[in-house]
Amino acid sequence: MRLVRMVLIAATASATLWLVLLNRRLYRPGRVETAVAQLRFLEHSLADGEAERMQALFPEGYVFSWALYGLASAQVARALPPSDERRDKALHEARRAVAQVASDYAKASFVSDMEPEYGAFYASWSLYLRSSVLRASGSKGAAPFDLGEYERDCDSFAAALAKTESPYLASYPGAVWPADTGPGVAALAIADSIFGGRYRSIIARWVEAARRRVDPEYGAIPHAANGGPRGESLALLSYVLVEVDPSLARRQYEILRENFVSYTWGVAGVREYPHGEDGPADVDSGPIVLGFSGPATVVGAGAAIANGDEGLATALLATAEVAGFPIEIAGRRRYIGGYLPVGDAFLAWARSALPGAPGVPYPPLVPWWWRLPVHALSLALGFSALYLALRANRGP
Image 1: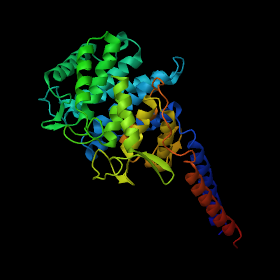
Image 2 (image 1 turned 180 degrees about the vertical axis):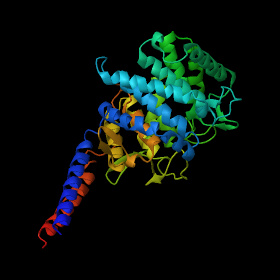
Image 3 (image 1 turned 30 degrees about the horizontal axis):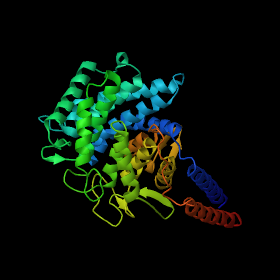
Image 4 (image 1 turned 30 degrees about the vertical axis):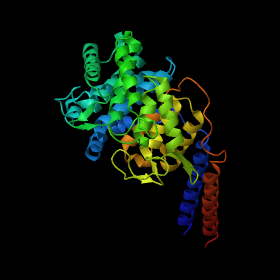
């Protein structure tokens, strides 16, 4: 019995410490340093074949896992000072991600006979990753991949945009999602910052076409080529389009804030469907709980950072800390036990976003007391655990 009491006391102490740390992270949910710890976990997880497991669960699981890991690594490298040895490590991992996304295994899930080759999803994320890594590397001479091939792929993507009346390219035959084209346009914008404006006219044409084809009810870029907006895709576009046209990105982000962000039961989140609307969950949204979508909430945090909305970014990242049950062991941080590494990669990409230029301040969306329900629940759980431990300690 004494051993049982000791185990119970130790478990109570551990749970209490976890609750204290959890409540502290509601105020500082972590940015670059936390992203570094996430990348350490992902480095080993992906090396153990978890990207292949994600591919078995999601149609683009392998590419998403490696691309987001590489993008987060590139952003961390840009955020760290040149003297920080972790910067070289982050660049090395970003370059490794480029190689994995370029592999035959990654391409095998996509249809090669398309324009651009392998479809909008693969072409966009492959280009976006390479553009981001090239920029983080600091110069064209430091390109960790075939620069000629990269330029040809940029030209091919730009040519596909120029040939189509719609601003949105097909990811698969007959299947078009605007959010799959957005990262590719962002890649061209980053390429322009490196090569000097080669794609400026194509990008301007795309922005104008995207503005003309917004949803008539909300003014948002739709989730599907013909349909209304959804939280996950609108959050992603609000994030990546900062590279393309900050005013377009800000407008889409404002629509996201006004129509999708909500607060309930002590947590802030991004709904998959607008206020007052409901719909089914799918592979894009993940499970929908209380109207909230995990991907929309996580990517929404990145969109908030990129658009200069620090208040909402903190609240959304705090939700990830509450709902994700993070565990950090030996400097490796994982969420939900590391069961879905692609989710960890999304969160690392979101929290490592570089803050956008401050504009007109955003009004607060969540009440000033938004943390209090979590504090109250934590106190109740803490006192209950303490009571059980004291009772056990009085035993024979």
